[in-house]
Length: 342
Image 1: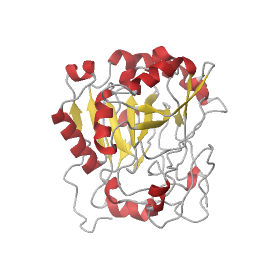
Image 2: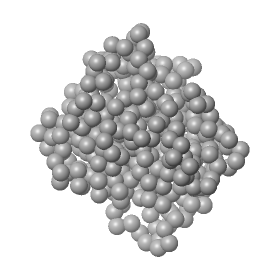
Image 3: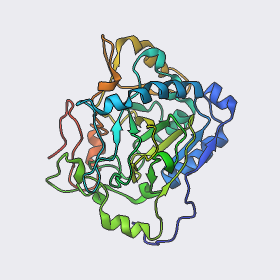
């Protein structure tokens, strides 16, 4: 934690408004890159507004919102119910459609967002995770534990960013995320409850240690902001945050794409239909390229049954050897490496 516990100068997430030209051309000016990078380094999060075609957002929301209640009843659906008392939060994983005609480039490979991320992570960031987060309507009171999306020992510098696309205007009235600004700058795996030798994959046990939350709350309390649909939110994966309940009647849907550097060697693969190969591989050849580490399968894929596998780990032995001397932790889900437990 910082030695000087002074109130943060900034207690709201920075929004960088993009021009219509930037949105249509999927470019971003150097000035807006500078604004976005300054906010990301300082706060761990930035919002690029007017980044996505509203028609694309509304089309996806129409599809996914109509499926939300059906998905909530499927045994294959993963719920993010890591609340302190174990009560349901109404927070579930719901990924985007996997038909090529619905895999919009300004969401799957957003030019302004990729340019900003590449300015920190280096060229051609890799995407190994595609999913979404839905706050079902009609929930009151229950909330997630404050956490970072990391359950394992990790670096003390930027190594992963998630882009989030809210499909509706989002505020505290329908479950916007609680954010602890600046926590990415001085955190490590030691701040997590499951930083122990016998860590398991029990979601109820993961999150930031309570004493650290109370200490930080004294000088930098969390915020719950507002995001307009058509925006892209870029967040450092180390940032502390929590999903809050959605008391409104309609689901609040947010898509998520995790980016890591080209050298990071995350073992996870995004499972995609063969029909999307040409589209996806074409994105890596653009001016602001993004590379999907994908496993293509010949059949159509039902996006409502995508397996929840948030594996953001690295297989780069040089990087792993330089990590702090802490327990390794674990990775949710299974892949070719299995769990990271020692």
